[in-house]
Image (cartoon, each protein chain N blue to C red):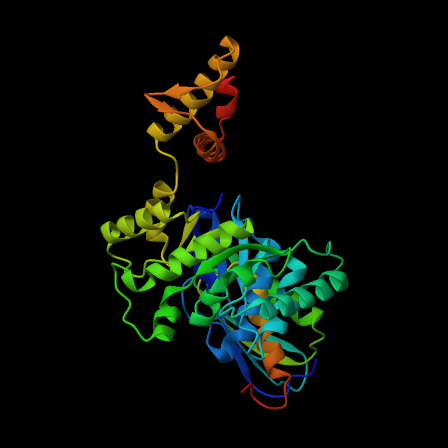
Length: 92
Length: 295
């Protein structure tokens, strides 16, 4: 899946993660800011990376602000952001 | 057993993830009014991932989809049906054709996803004057129909009347839905009480709905769950009376007596039926076989 434009999904509320996906020239870069970085930072990055791989995203810059999201929420928000970013036009 | 049906917004991870801990018998994950049009995709994705990975305990899972007059409902079902929710709640159901259209789509998707055809039930939300007037036709429109559900906020707008705590403006609709559902042999559930702070008002409203024949009531706040559960649960006195009914029946059989009375009143078929429902409900709620105690 090609990232064609910047798109976002999620919120800054508790138990959520706000994910922004942008086009990138080469490879995947994940910038994470999490309230639980010390305990789960690596796990969150791993989940984000796994979802990108499942969706066939090879080049993207992903910024995520996490407030204690569970794995299912992380997966959902990354998927939504990627699908939105792969559209030619923003969703009406 | 559906004493309480708690609405949860499908795009709110905090509420979704805690859904199984809030004490409700059923959870209604809302993809309709609680989700803005530009967030429908995010809500579907979140609900799909949550239903696929979280444990909601004994809670029944219901999904309120968007109305059949919107561009969203078919995609709602495509996302959600593979997760095998117990029921689908379509909003603003107006007549039998509405249910038959939904039934047809469910059949198509169940076949596509390898789900037993007919296993997804429908809880129809009636919240328009047309829906209320067509309640019996709606109740009998499909074998999937499990219950009717009254939505009083939209209904009072459609009726052009003010929604009050006393609820006199929805008395006709409440009675009509109970009668239509019972005539069709399905369940019927009452509209939520919308003042989150007023627990006394909630209790009165729930007692009134129970007295009309509703099986349970929706909640829009977790703070309402305990009160509604209590109102729609049999009281210790109800349970004792029901046990006594079966005890006197057993005693009369033993003695070969035809006519049976308890506390000065004749025990007839409707009393036995009510006693049976009380013990069934109590057994389910408390995990105790009250029928075994009556033998």
